[in-house]
Amino acid sequence: MTFLPDWPNAADPLLLFSILLLAGLAAGELVQRALRLPRITGYVLVGALVGLFSQRVFGRPLMEDARLFADIALGLVLFELGRRFDFAWLKRDRWLMATGLTESAATFAAVYGVLHLLDFHAAWAAVAAAIAMATSPAVVMLVVRDTRSEGQVTERALCFTALNCIAAGITTTMLLSWLHLEYKSGWMSVVLHPLYLLVGAGVAAWVLARLLILAGRWCGKRETAQFVLLVGTVILAVGVAEMLKLSVLLTLLLLGMLSRNLDRHHALLNIEFGYAAQPFFVILFVVTGAGLALADLEAAWLPALAYVAARFLAKTLTLLVLGRLNGFSLDRAWLTALALTPMTGVAVILVRDTTSFYPELGTPLASTVLTAIALLDLVGPIATQLAFRRAGESHPEEPRHG
Image (cartoon, rainbow, N blue to C red; front, side):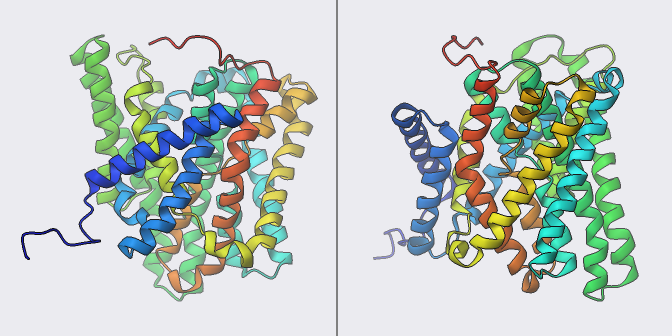
């Protein structure tokens, strides 16, 4: 009978959103209450299960239908992280940016060296190493929020996370020139494509930041109006980046940074998205779990373990060596490195964007990096939570305000 819905292809985005949200919420609360693990771990685990189920029932990956929700969530996280990036602080602490960029460069070199030893193609090894530079802003910021963490380790972890993401985004974009050369693309692609991505993200972020500040002055200091303004601008920026085929990562990070540092008269309030954005954050991690390459775990576990180990050692050793220049004890430097373990979200976006150009030879890259992400999805949030607790900066028992 034609009036009955088709099955199993009848699921629309609204139904999908509600299923992911409720399943993720339940799993997050379960692992937090029963195992004292971060809620993010539960979100990712249920996402992996729902992803397998949806592939079999609906015949397509869950990520395809839920990508918009994940991009909005990631945009909110990146914008809020960029808003924490204070140029004045970096001027006062000159070694902070130098340490973050050195740590990113050391991570690239270590991961590239390990993958080269494992006979990876040089171009793909470089792209994978660039992605390894990234730290998950979503994991770090949500663990900070859940544990109410405040202090030197927390602030430096957030600063290094922003630097890591910027370095990973720029380096991955620049490496597109090498990939275009490898696949015999024209000189316009080799030169102009990376330039378009970098300049385009900067221009789009600058224009939107200026418009946001002007709108903030017009709205006044009303929290409700500014909250809607910020969320609307973030969604607009995600849409603009998608429409113009720019990097969502760079556009939203730069938008957050510029909206803070160009706002000399403090027209914009320091508003955290908090409860209102929580559903999108749950969706982000459920969708990330759904997109994990679980089928590749058996074949890619060895290079993935080498990838994770090289990344962790490079970040840890660099911060231990340079920590003293930032007035950090060895213990706090080690805990900061531990907090930088996660690489979910941004890394998935970078893999997706890079392999979309040359999918036929992107399989080794995607399987290794996504398997590494799968491993870090489980241990990353736990490591970040442990780092803040060991530093004495988390206060989960205190009531949440706002």
